[in-house]
Every structure is written in structure tokens, then in C-alpha cells.
Length: 105
Image (tube, rainbow, N blue to C red; front, side, top):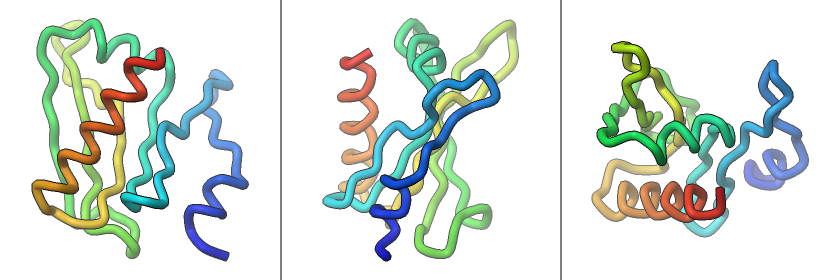
């Protein structure tokens, strides 16, 4: 079974029972996780911060890309995106997915 099929057949929920799967794109090979409440905070933030880690990433991906905001003077990760490469195109696709999901909410 292919990774994206496995992800599609799973239910990803938080402890507060919110949906956690944000995007599962077979076309771009990007998988992202966040919640509706996190996206609302993100969309209402004046400044966002991004980070990427290469060492803490599943074998099928090259990078775990995170999007953070400040809440009460603390940096809080709101979105987690698994990226298949570190190319500019891949980052653009990740942000496009994020913008699309934010507009839905």
C-alpha cells in the first residue's frame, strides 16, 4: 500500500478530538498536519516564523518544515509539513497548500 493511501485511510485526531491532517497531496508528495484552531491563530497573526529540520524526519521525506507564531511571548508550532525535497519549488508548493487550507477555514 502506498504512503498517501495509508494516510487517507487513517484518522488523525488531537487529544481535543480535532482533525489533525491538513494536506495529503499525492501530486506534490507533501503531507501536512495542523488543526482548525491552529490555522485560525496563524491567520490572525501579524508575523509567522518557519523552521526546517533534516534530522527529525521520516525516512521517505527530506525535511520536517514547521510554521510558528508567538503566543504570550512564546514561539508555538502550529503547522507541521513533511517535504520530499529542499527545493524552492517544494517550499512554494508547501506554502500554496497552507494558503489554500487557511482560505477554507
